[in-house]
Length: 208
Length: 223
Image (cartoon, rainbow over the protein chains, first blue to last red):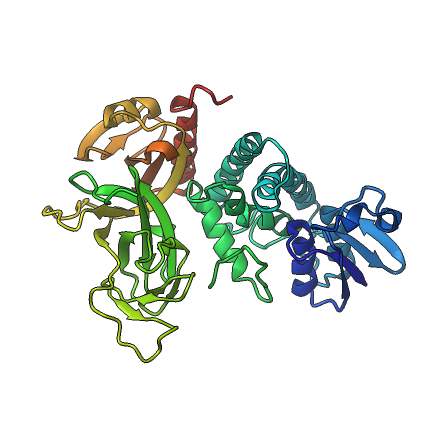
C-alpha cells in the first residue's frame, strides 16, 4: 500500500491519521506539491487525472479523494467496523453527510490557509466567511451531541467523519479563522488529539 | 496593544468547561486579549495573553503540573505568573521582575469570571448548583442585558452583573443563567448555565434557544 503524500496537506493528513489508527503498514511517496506543483505534472496526471492529492495505491489500483480513501481503508481494514460503521446502517447516512461537509470545509477554511500560508490568489474574505458559516453548524452539532452524552460527530465513537473534519478545522488559525468563537469545536479537537496513536502535523500545536 | 485594563466589575469570560484542567484557552474581553488556563490543581487563572519574552500568545502554551510554558521559546511561569524557568539558560534563576500580568479569575455558576487585578469586589456568588450549558458566538453584542433578555424572549428574575442575570424563559421549566461577553471587533459570546437538576431535554432546549440569538444579533452584511 502506498500513499502519495505531502506533509503540509490536511487532506493527506486525514489518510496518515487513519493509517496510524488502524496500524496499517504502508509506504509514503512524497509529492512536491509546493513549490514544484508535481501534482499537476504529466506523470502524476496519469495517476490522478484531477491533479489532486492524496492518492492511495492499494492492490495495484489507485484511489483518489481523501474521503473516498478513508471509506476504502475503514471498510476494508478496520476489524472493529467502527470507523465506517457498516454494521449500523442507521449511522451510515449520517457519517456520509459529514464527509460531504468536510469537503465544504476544504473549499473554505483550507482555501483561506492556502492564501495565507502559500500565497494562493483567491478571495480570502469570502473563504473565511464561508468557513465561519460551517463552523457555526459544526459547533452547534457538537455542543448538542455533548449535551446528549456523545463525544463525536456521529455518536459515542469516532468515525471517518471526525477524521475528515479534523485537519482543516484544527488548522483554521493558519487561515485567519478564530477558533475561540467555537468552544464545543475546541473541546472536540482536544478529545481528538488524545485518541490512541494520534500524531500531530506541522501547524497543529495542541498537546495533551 | 493598549495597556490591558478592563472596565470595573466581573466579566463572564466563558463556561467552566471552556478551560479543562491542564489546558489553556483564549478569550477576548472588550479589546483585551486574555489567556485562561488551569493547572492540574484545577484553579482557573487569567493572564494578559502575551509572553513577557517575545509577546507570543500564552493561550498557545502548554500546561505541565501547575506551570504554563510558552510555545515559542519555552519560558515557563508558575501559577502566580512569576517566570519559573528559561530553557536557553538552564542555570539561571529568573529575575523576579519577569512576570505575566495576572487578572483576577474565579469559577461560579458554571461560568469563568474575570476582573482587573485591582478589582475590590468579590466574584459573583450565585445560589444553587449550576452546570455549563452552551456558548454561542454572535456577530454583534447586545447593548444591554434587557436587550439580550428580550432577544431570547426571557424575563429577568435577578441581575448578577451588567452582563449576567438569572432569567426565566417560557419554553423551558426552571431558571437559566444567561450572560453575554462583548468582544468588540470579534462580536460577542452568549453563555448559558442551567440548574444541575435540569433534564437533558431542558439543556438541549436552552442550547437551541441561544443558537437562535445569532439571527437577532446579526451583522447587517451577513446573509
